Length: 284
Image 1 (spheres, helix red, strand yellow):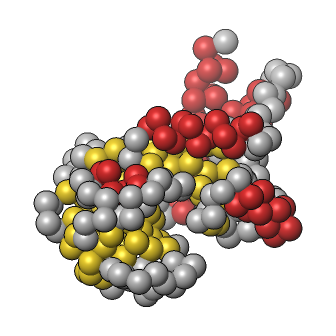
Image 2 (cartoon, one colour):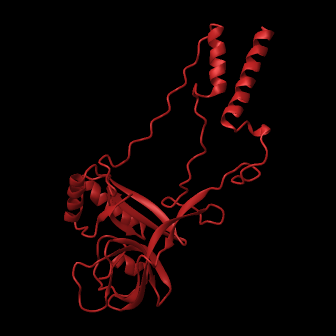
Image 3 (cartoon, rainbow, N blue to C red):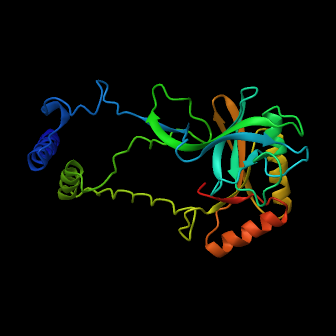
C-alpha cells in the first residue's frame, strides 16, 4: 500500500518536472524573479470603469431656458449642434448646480435661447420657469482607471474586472492526467471532469450593437419608478439602472433587449406612442 502511494507521488512530481521542461515555465518555487506584472502579494492590478467628461466629443455653453411646462423623459436638454443623443453632464453656471442627463437635437428650433431644458432638468438645476440661465453641456464617456484612487463603483459604473480565474478540471492538466492513468492501471474509476459552462448568449440574439431602448435619465427615483410603471401597464418590461457621478444619484429607465432591428423599431414606436418621444437606442 505504501509503495503504491510512493509510486503515485513520484509519477505526479515527474509530470510537474516534465511540464516545466516542455513549456519552459516550471512551477513558481523553481523559478527566478517575477515578470513585474504582479505585486509582492501576487495580486494583479484591478480596474474600474467610470464616467469622465469628454469635451472633445461634445461641449457647448449657451443660454438655456425652461418654458415652465412639464415634460416627459426625465433629465434632458436639447441643442441644435447635437448630432446623436449623448449622455452628458449639465451645469447651471449661474449657481454651480449640475445633473446627469441626455442631450438631444431639438425636433424644431423655437425662438429664444438655444438650449431647451426639461422640467426635471430645470428642477435639478434650480432654474425658474421662463428665466434664462447660463448652461454648460459636456459629453460623458466611460474610461478604465486603476481601482486604487478611483471613484467608488456604483450600480452602473461598477467594477468590470473579471472574477479571479478558477483552474478548470481537465485531463489536459499533466498532473491530473498522470494521476488518472495510475488510477486506471490500478482498476480505480477515473473521474470525468465536468464540462466547462458555456458562456451565456449575448443579450441581443440578433447581434444588435444597441439592443436596448432608453426612455430617460431621472434625478428623482420616484419619477423613474412612475415611468417604469407606465411602461409595464403598456405590456413592456422596463429596467431601472441606478448610477452615481460626483456624488449625485440618477436613474436610467431602459427596455429590452430587442432581438432584431424590426423588434427594436416596433419597441421604439410603442414607447414613443406613449409620449416618450426622446427615447433612443443604447448598448445597455
